[in-house]
Amino acid sequence: MLGGYLGAIVLLLLGIGVGLLLVYAPTILAPRRPLPQKMIPYESGMDPVGSTRQRFSVHYYKVAMLFTVFDVELALMYPWVVYFREDPQWAFWLFISFTGVLAAGYIYLLRIGVFDWSRKEL
Image (cartoon, rainbow, N blue to C red; front, side, top):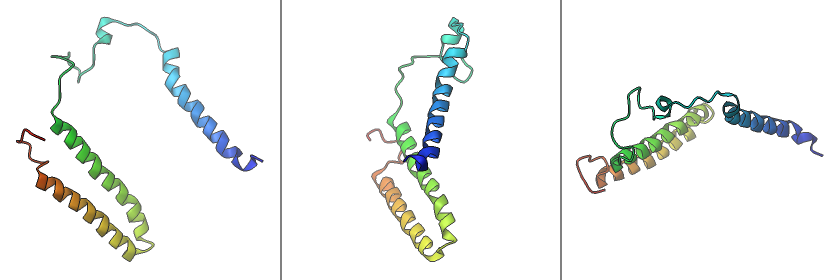
């Protein structure tokens, strides 16, 4: 009854087992020697200076979200390149429409002033 799914079930159980092993093995096998020098946060090899509760500007998060959007665009172009060999005309127009939607979003963000770093309000 489950003969067709046996390989997938074994692979799933193996993946879960390896994942659990990789998560819990360090807590079981690693030596514990908590020293004060080891307990401070690591910041580029320097001792931390200032408060750990420092607030970041919202502009930082806007840049991160914009990067994510345009990074996803690039990731979605790889399957398009592969499909381009099979049906070039359809893939070309698909690419044009996809890029057009992203360009419209970029122009909208440009018009509302998201890229203006000197403004204080959001």
